[in-house]
Length: 185
Image (cartoon, rainbow, N blue to C red; front, side):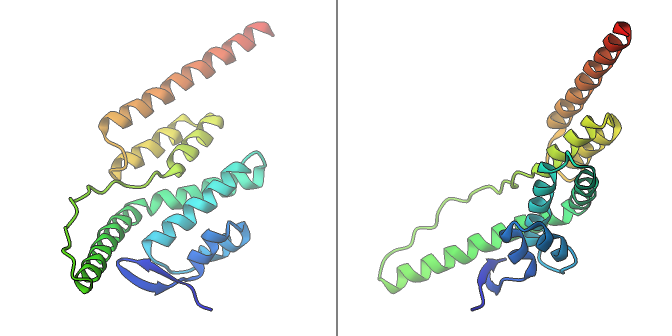
C-alpha cells in the first residue's frame, strides 16, 4: 500500500527520501542522498543522517562522514529553509481551506485564525558541526559554520556575535590548558 504525505499543501506519494529519513536506517539514508526530492524531505533526510553520524563521531570514519554530510546540509540550507517556509505557508492555507469547507458543509460559520508568523525549524546541524570543529581545534571552521547560519538568516547579528564569542572563549580555554600541560612537563 502506497503511503501519502502532505507537501506544499497537497497530498503526494511518499518518496524514497521520506521513507529513508523516517526509517532512521543509516544505510537507507545514505542511499537516499542521491534521490531528487522536495526541500522538506531533503532537509529532514540530511538532518536525520547528520544526527545519526554525529552520535557516532567518536569513530574516525563516522566523524569524516558526519562532517561531509553536515557540510552538504549547510551548503543547501538557503534553498531548504526557503522551501520549508513555502511548505508551511501552503500547508497552512490548505488546512484552512479544508476546515472552512467542512464548516460550510455542516452549516457552521468558519472563523479564520490569526496569522501565525513563520519560525524556521531548529537545525541541529549548525551546532553539531561547529562543536565537532571545536573538538578538532579548527576554530576558523567553527566560526564559518555560524557565519553560514547568519548568511542564510537562521541567526541574527546578535546570535552570530554570541556564537563567535563562545568560540573565542573555547580557544582561550584550550590555549590555557595546553600551556598548563607544557609547564607540567
